[in-house]
Length: 229
Image 1: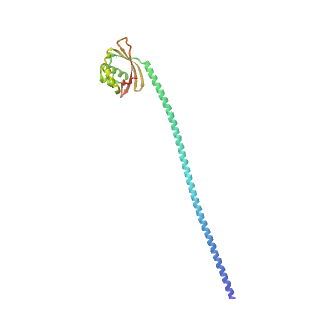
Image 2: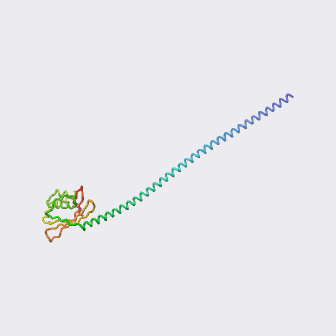
Image 3: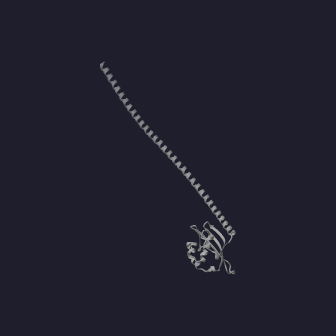
C-alpha cells in the first residue's frame, strides 16, 4: 500500500516537473518573441523619425528654392525695368539734343540775320583785350597793323602760332579802309564764327571776305587760324 502511494507521488512529481519545464520553455519563447517585437518596433520608430526628419529637410529645401526663385524673378523684373528706363532716357536725351541743336541753329541764324555790322576803321583800331570774340578780332587786327607779334600770339590758339608771322610782317594795312564784322554765329557756348569784310582803298576792288573762328580758352577768346571754318 505504501509502495503504491509513493509511486503515485513520484509520478505526480515527475508530471509537475515536466509541466514547469514546459511552462519555462513557453515563457522563454514568449520573451524572445517580445524582444524581437520590441527591436522591430524600435527599428520602425527610428525609420519613422528619419523619414520625418528627411521630410522636414525636403520641405525646408523646397522653401529655400522657392524663396531663391522669387528673388530671381524679382531681380529679373528690376533689370527689365532698368533697361526700359535706360531706353526711355536715351530717347529723351536724343530728343533734347535734337531740340537744342534746332534752337542753337535758329538762334545763330537769327543773330546772323539781325546783327548790325560792326565797322572798325583801320586807323582807329586799338587793343580791346579778348573778353569777347569781337574784341579779340579788333585786337588781332590792331596787333597786325602794329606788327606786335606778342599780342598777335596771345590772340590765337597755341596750334595757330606758326601762322602769326605772316600777319606780323605784312604791310597790307596801308591800303585798308575798314574791317567790318557783318555776321556772327555761335556754334556752342565756347565757339563763335565771325563773318568779316575788309574794305580796301581801291574802290574797284571788291571787299575781302573772311570767316574767322574763335574759341574761348581760359576765359579769353582766341582765333583758330588753322581751322577757320
